[in-house]
Image (cartoon, rainbow, N blue to C red; front, side, top):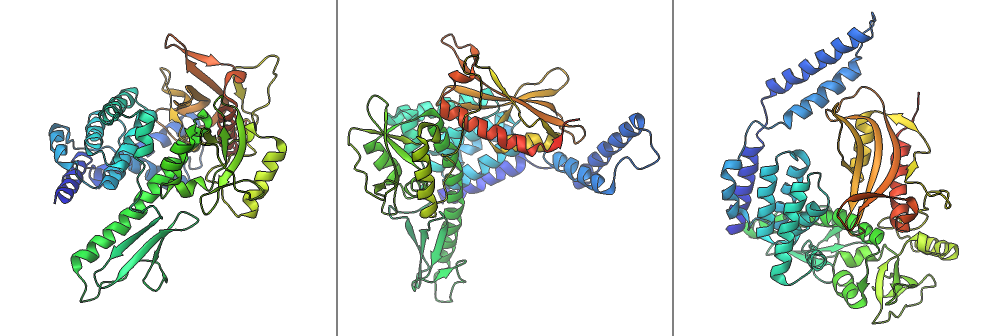
Length: 481
């Protein structure tokens, strides 16, 4: 009953707070902005032909209508105290609805802070993972700082570090240690397991794979059936959230050179029903106490570490473990591991090999890497490509021009900055945007942000940021005028 009440209150609060404008107001807004675009083009580009094609008209109307629908006409901030009763809502629902609100309503800072308080009060693993993500990657410093304060308070209560809290709060999506769970219909029982592609596979008692849970029989308990269907739905949703978040978390751990003791690695990663399977799609490295790399390995299907020759690797109990990277491998090792993954038909959880660092003059290292392709594209396409990779819009000048997108690798203490031209705060579809350069910065002992020369950036982080940079550069396909 607490869970049901919490879910109801959360949905009601968000529905009232995000109440959209009427469809007539939405259409009027889009029509007015379209008229302004047509008038502007006719003023500066006199022509007898239509300045807006039918296809572009539909695109513009759709985009402006979408923007207007996101401008809420209501507010529930005055009733935020009611969220105290929503803390027992399912953790997956708290996480999912908060993520959606952060994405669609990132300017509603008061409501966001109230939702962060709710996540902290819940302490459900899925909720804590969202709180951790916000404390590291959110466009408003005020929100990052508040999330960090809440995380610090939770960790202090449990006598953990923030990293220990993060490791111990990764949701399991309902799976047991063997990566399985049971759905009970009363008369029938169904089983869910994780396959090699990290998909939730549903099977009946005869081990036949099912696409969905079947309709209940007349003799089966309706409440049990309802609970089983909710469990399966939550399992799939939470599984996707864990995979998406851990892809970002583990990649950042790789860039920062984070290490685990062998015991921590076995307990927190390999024993976890989801992380243990993710680890099988990654290459790891044993590290000695001084930080020097030793052998590379990958967990096999039985979760025992193996090398490229399929021999079991006996890890030193006093050693450390980190994620491997091609910049720290010999050419022979990189080739051997590429062949190993191919032979085992393993799709890497994210790339680790063949990620080179950018070329530069070692005798005179620059502070930035210029875009080698120098193409242009629509502003929306360029900003979307950067945001999909986790980069956040930076500051802007008095004219509303955004000059960079940033990504804070806090574990490494480095901020990656991508310089752009032609993107404005108010968006828009006209004009051309260009990717200019890639640079890095960090805070010095006084807390001041200082730029880093390329040779001062950790090699793994440099290679990964450069890979992102080239991927976005490839999106800018039009030759520069």
